[in-house]
Length: 368
Ligand code: MG
Image 1 (cartoon, helix red, strand yellow):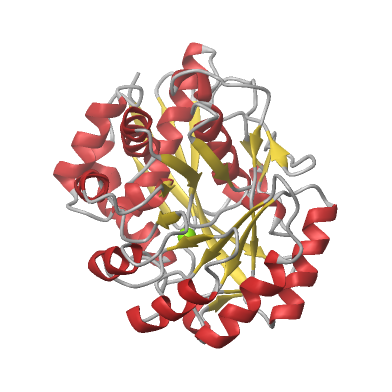
Image 2 (cartoon, protein in one colour):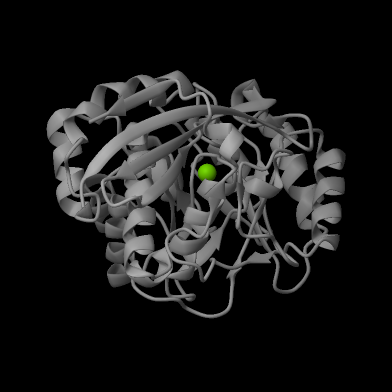
């Protein structure tokens, strides 16, 4: 089987809540996502998706996805899409860095591998555990009472895990965490995710002020060393996210005992192939994981479901159903949340079919 065409289409994903706000006053109201299509000489096509959390979250931006695919695609025409390790080696040889650019192509090739073998991606990633996976709900940054009201709303819909977007004014954040912690019940999990937003002295104040609460602290500061310093003064369970963008820093963080949970995002690491490598390493090391992506619609959500459901449940801390945050469907067959849980499709590949009208006008189109 050979790749004969790679194309990329832009799609806008507005939010049900109108806007998503996190640390440092950053917000997005309409996500700019890219559907990536890979076609082959045997008539099998696969689809991936890449959706940065705006241009100011990770070193990734939406136009960069398309520009990068235009750069990369000519090197991949004629390659065997089902040889995923070799495909990633080819991508890394043709374009240094830019993992998020490669993520959609890699995801589409896993879809092709599944379709051509008749197997769902979760089975190809190691096997399906259980009937479903536990979702968390991200709570956009607002006033403490408004965030508590959102938690109550999503709790009523079945979510039991909540990730508060903090990383703002530390006094406000202390109030936010206390307001929401008061609502937690046995079995719930609360994560305060600062998304790099606190200076170390601010982070120290917050972790001390919430010390009596059952809360996880996620990525308090910008750099790895700042986070490690906070970690060493904090007895709450600790999550690292933005700074863990590859195997080398994952191994360093494990050796430093810098985290209890790591947040693995598919596009941050460069696709399902590289995220599986990090995931399997975490399984061997006993590090729990939040498995997700920076953002996305139905295709990213399907990929997350396959990744999460092929992870041993005792180490799969939680994952995300981004498609329930956005008001536009981009594909049929995607996971549908039920009482705070979702399951990976049992159809071959990712189990999603992009709506054909969204593929009509590619911004990038490279053919043999
Ligand atoms: Mg995070």
